[in-house]
Image 1 (cartoon, one colour):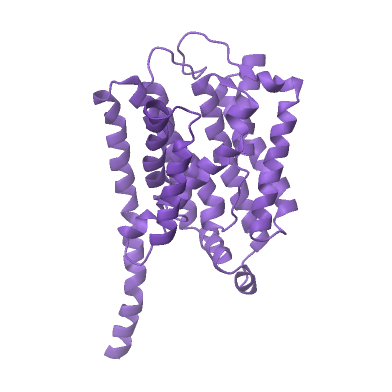
Image 2 (spheres, one colour):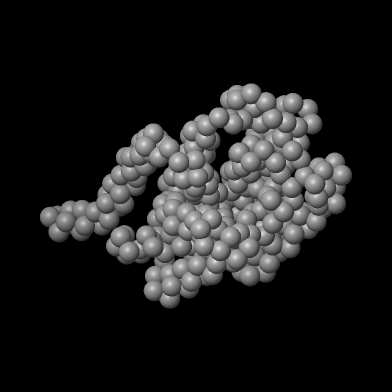
Length: 337
């Protein structure tokens, strides 16, 4: 009897530790939010504030990509398409009809989720690198379509009409503080959605699909529906980030929101920090985005390509030394969530 109870307690111990580790993530998030919210009060430099905004934004966007690629195992190289849909939806509605960017953000996010379902229905029959190539090609087609569409300003893009500082128009010319808090809110919402899904049935299904789709399906996992759900959620938050970015720069054109480099920028932080983890995208963005901005400003300019060389070098080092990502350095047993 005692031996049976001991065995049961031993088998329950890993589950209890995992549950405790999961609960500990929320206080960590609260601490990160508190530090980030107070940081602008001591960091008055506008340039550094801009770096902070971009870091938070790309942390959220990389987490969005991570939902589909990191948890479900569907590597996408076409998320710039959803980013562009969100940016153009908010810009088109605000510049053309005066509709608040908040509604434009929601419209773009819903449209992107629907588009992801359509593309997923077509592409989820492909496996491995064929799926990745398909997403990249579709995103490039979307770029060309917008580039030649007079409705969306073609190559000239859409300029946002400038007005007084207002939360309803999401425009703030006098200070960047509101954009910092908006970017922080975007990151927190994306993180919380990932956190909630990770501990749900969908989260367990996604990880099972990532490990072995055939085995997961034999155990009753609805593989196709799970992939479709992951694609829709991922696209929704990616488009929300696109709408925020459009409001921040007050201008969009095809190359500035739909080029292939955005798809790479969404993927690289997660790969560097730890793909399929809660904090991997944030850690990766905290390293990559400041390096990018500082390199462009102080070393070689935007066209030097030095930032891309640094990207490649970091990814090569991580792939050779710690393929699980940087989080595996501080998490026993690897970087898997």
